[in-house]
Image 1 (cartoon, helix red, strand yellow):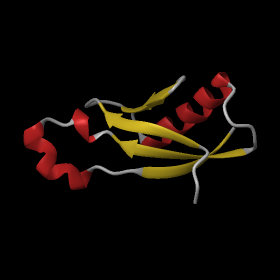
Image 2 (image 1 turned 45 degrees about the vertical axis):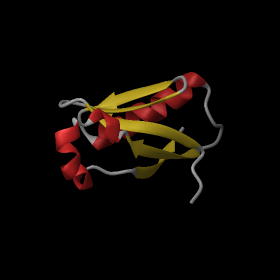
Image 3 (image 1 turned 90 degrees about the horizontal axis):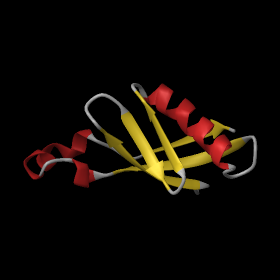
Image 4 (image 1 turned 30 degrees about the vertical axis):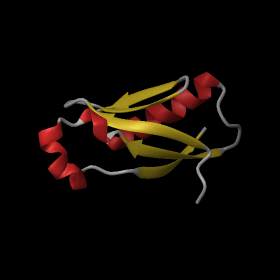
Amino acid sequence: MKADVELVLAHDGERWIARGGPIRASGRTLGELDASVAEALRAAGGPVGPRVTVFMGFDFDTLPRWMRQYAAHYFNRTVTVEV
């Protein structure tokens, strides 16, 4: 599945954060993040359509070097949101 939008995904200890270009979204849960991404896409005048596929690639550089051995616990995700 080809994504319409690609964002960088990170976690700051409290919230999931997705960002890329003019898009910045966050949420305490992945559900909240997805809703925030949809809202950010609408506000930015992003891809037009009832549904937009968004790829979020985890930013492993946000992890301290000593923690990268646990990187398998983090992930990339693809979601389809209603815009």
